[in-house]
Image (cartoon, rainbow, N blue to C red; front, side, top):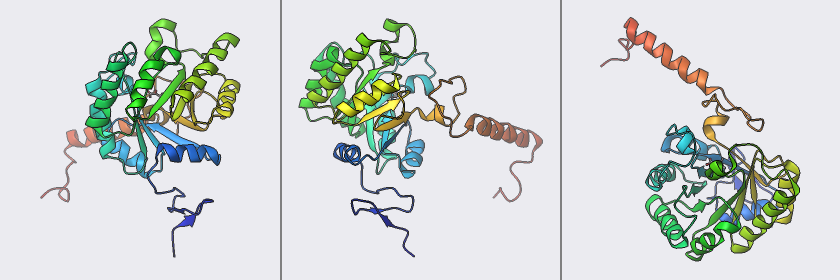
Length: 284
Ligand code: KIV
């Protein structure tokens, strides 16, 4: 019996209903066109990338949230370009279908478009990733334009932009007032006009995110931005319940891995100390 079905466009789908073809920026655009939502998760290493890619996640974002969840920093600011490249290269090695997008870390693209291009080129050359992501609108337009001019796809990121945390002083919702909402809409249009292929909208009112998503031709990916965006992204440690200290309203936990992992580690320690691991069958 065949395990394949066919999508509306006639493409053979795998048993899990996932189009097995590699995800490209053009395919994300087509998904928006036919109203198919885009599933994005962060990934920072080979093993997770393999699982998430195999599960049919469309885009793996090597987010600079690695600074928090992989390196234990309070903010995303300390992570370096070299560290991001290491994470990205591991994710690329674990991926065969998903589009891999990598955050340009703080201080590697904002003030100097030549430096922005060099940083993006290093990510593409040294990791094999498919695209980069940057935070901000008009203020980084020159950097975005320069990266795009080298043929490197760029994903924008507006709303709550964690690299600017010290400017705002909190992680509260953004663009809740008229003026900031209008500015965000202008920035979104600018990023699209510059040539960005997609846009992350973080922690903004659902109504505004829906408006941006309707007005833009490029796909929007929301986090804490309601259901009206063209796709959703979550940080993998958060959605798996590994990172217990973070519980914003927008976070749905799909597993409770903190309990699973600590329970397994506790049992292992008990077995080792009791001398019951390894058993005869587990020995040579
Ligand atoms: O760094 C990150 O993980 C991100 C997502 C939360 C969008 O930018």
